[in-house]
Amino acid sequence: MGMNTFLRISLFALFVAFCARSYAAEEDEQELEATETNAPLAKAESSKAPSPALTAFVLGAGTGALILSGVEWSDDANDIQSSAAPTQSRPADGATINGGVITFTWKTFADAATYLIDIDHCEAPDVCADLRLEQTPETTYTLSWPAEYPAGRWRIRAVDADNIAGPWSPFRNFTIEPATE
Image (tube, rainbow, N blue to C red; front, side, top):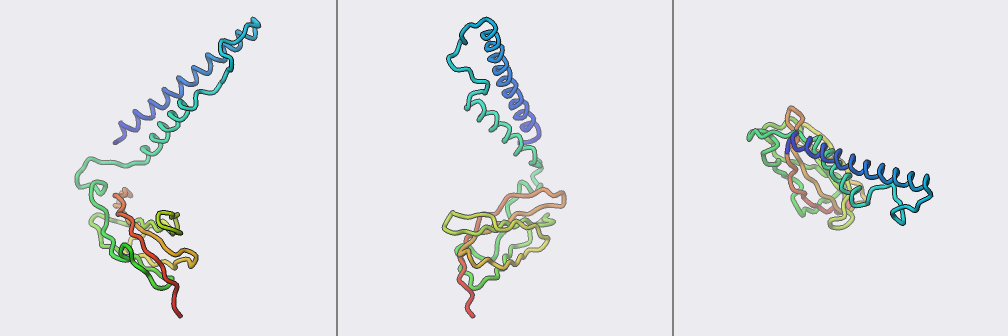
């Protein structure tokens, strides 16, 4: 998936949009002719909008092109994109953390200039929402955990000097026990 794929998807989406627009223009012409001659329309209901399936297809192709447009990709085997994700250290998957301050740690990753850490709060298993997305040059990140959230999850990815991000590590889940005084 490179620039060629992006261009192909973009051109295809434009072609489909053009066809849908031409179809709508043809319907407008038929409607105009029918009103000028007082003849009934060929269709019982005239719609100027393309079919919902066609609209969804065009939006899907356009979304795919948009997503692909931001991808920096290289076929170089040494590129950070083709390597593994950084190794997470703490908290471990399934850990229970006492108190409201959490320190996330991971191992140094070759070719990484910075790291992106994605931290979500969870109200139930697999019912999570973004809490923080931070970029740091360090291999540690400390956060005061909001007391209203009983659990969370986190993952990490390396970013090289050209600002190209590698793959995400898997999420690690953890639970929070209230701080004891």
